[in-house]
Amino acid sequence: MKPLSIHDVQTEGVELTLQSLRAYWSDHDHFAVAWSGGKDSTALLTVLIHLIDAGLLPQPECLWVFYADTRQELPPIQLAADQIMAKLRLRNWIRVVTVRAPLDKRFMVYILGRGVPPPNNNTLRWCTRQIKVEPMAAALEKALLDVPGKALMLTGVRQGESAIRDGRIAMSCSKDGAECGQGWYQQVLPDAKGIKGRLATLAPLLHWRVCWIWDWLKVYAPMPEFGGWPTQILADAYGGDDAKEINARTGCIGCPLAQRDTALETIVAMPAWAHLTPLLDLKPLYRWMREPKQRLRKAGAERLKSGAIAKNPQRMGPLTLEARSEALERVIDIQSRARVDLINAEEEARIRALIAAGTYPDKWTGDEPRADRWLDAVYGDGTEQPILFRELVGS
Image 1 (cartoon, helix red, strand yellow):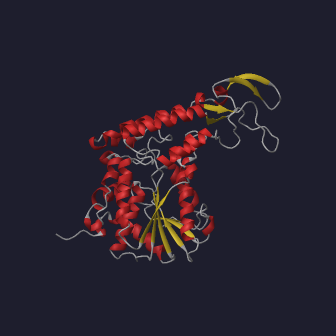
Image 2 (cartoon, rainbow, N blue to C red):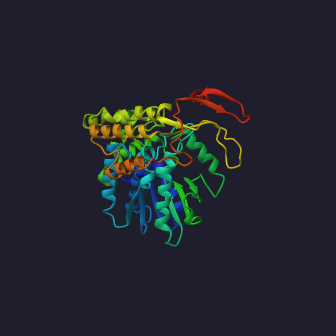
Image 3 (cartoon, rainbow, N blue to C red):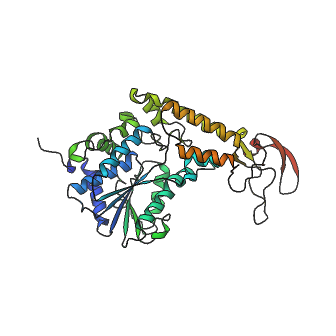
């Protein structure tokens, strides 16, 4: 039987990817992959390495693989990522860097130690930039700052993954030297300021359909001919044959931004991962933390540096110290029952130290009233009237 080649795999998608990479490859001296461990970036990483192994793309002197470790990944996907990294490190031309946010900016430490409420889609979506984008940009800048020449960062961004992302692609394709004919190529990566002008990004899977992603991860990538990558679990975590394009894996266990954690629900239904069922308690805990009773609010009007009154008087703010202490114990209980590591020893010690020091976000002292209590709301015209905070903000 004739061995399979890359040309046997969804020819249209692979050919577009190869054309995209070849169009920009020779213009750059250094290459990197931004890898989240999810389906698209894992497909990109493993397809790229196979193209190089097959001699269809020149092997670079060094390929940097930056793995974004949020410390909140689903355990089976984290296991797959660990196994993939072990295989990557067997190649002397690939350099793997695990990227994490600084201790005080990690998801659990930022919430429980500093008191910043869990993110939400309306007013406070801080998580992605803080625990993924900024650390990735900092790691890339550190790696390439003293290296001469131009660098190309490859991402797994695809059209069709979300309407919001498609809108960003459409808007950016007409500025900053961006092109969308052969992948999504951008000459500007604003978060890596230290290497500005020497770094571009390319999304060579931009035109891949989701069914091509599943075919690659479930059928081809695990085959020895294509690298023998442990990618089957990724498809299973997204729902296997019933996986949907949107609202599957969210990137963090119990993501507060998602209505449902479909991936976690799918995983715990598997006998091998049923012990992770206690992780389903995280989403209710995040909702509990956002309630007014667990938070502080500004008393009266808040003046800006200009002297003007802020538009959101009596705004709801950080978690109380008591709420943080209770939430910490509940997270520790959840991770103990699920036999996972949501908060490690270093993070737990830092959280407890920040709580003991009475740490709050900037412009908050801890002396503010609790958000579920009455107070006189002061308005710009100097009039006062009693009003319940939650009615004021409509929450």
